[in-house]
Image 1 (tube, rainbow, N blue to C red):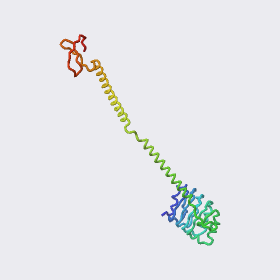
Image 2: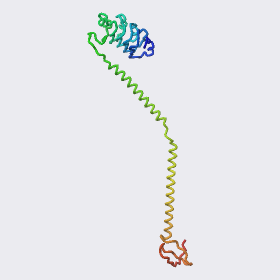
Image 3: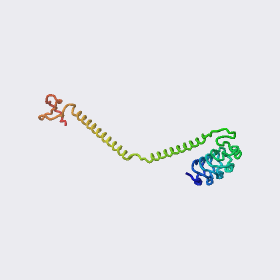
Image 4: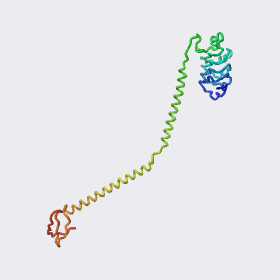
Length: 240
C-alpha cells in the first residue's frame, strides 16, 4: 500500500499519465507538481481533500476520483483552477449524494464536459480510450524498434570481432599444394623427356634392329628381333 508517499514522484516531472488506484491514499497534499500530466487515476483510495496540489498539473484533462471519501463541494473548489479539465469521475463519493450535485459541479467547473460518464444534459457517454491505447502502442513499438536496433548492432559487433580461421595456415596449405603440383608437373616433364630420348635412341638404332656388333672380325648386323640369325658381311665403318 502507498500511504501518502506521493512526494517520491518528484523526479518524474514529465509524467503524462499516472495511475495510483486502491493504494490507501488519504490526501494529495504531498503530490509534487507534474506539469505535463494529462491523466490522473486515483480511484478507490481514501482521499478526503488536499486537492490544492493538483493545481501544479495545469495540463490535467482527465481526473478519476471515484470510490473515495470527498465529502463536500468545498473540497472540490481547487479543481476550478484547472482550465483544461474536461473529464471528472466522482462516483461513490459522499458529495454525489448532495442536492443539486451535478448542476453545481458543472457550474463550478465551466470547462468540464463529462461528469461521472454523463454530459451536462445527463446523457451517458462512453470514454474513448483509443488515444491512450495508441500512445501505449507507439511507446511499445518504439521500445521494440530500439531493442531490435541494439540487437543488430551487437550482431554486427560480434561479426566484426570474428577473425578468419587461420588465414596464414590457409595460405601455407595453398603454397604446399602448388608446390606439390609443380613437382608432379616436373616429374611428368622428366618422364616425357626420357621417353623422347628413348625414341631418339630407337630411331638412331634403326627401328627394331639391334646395334651392330662385330662377328669374327667381320662386321655384321643382326636381323630384327625374333628372326633367325644370319650374319651379313659388311665392309663399312664400325658404328657404335
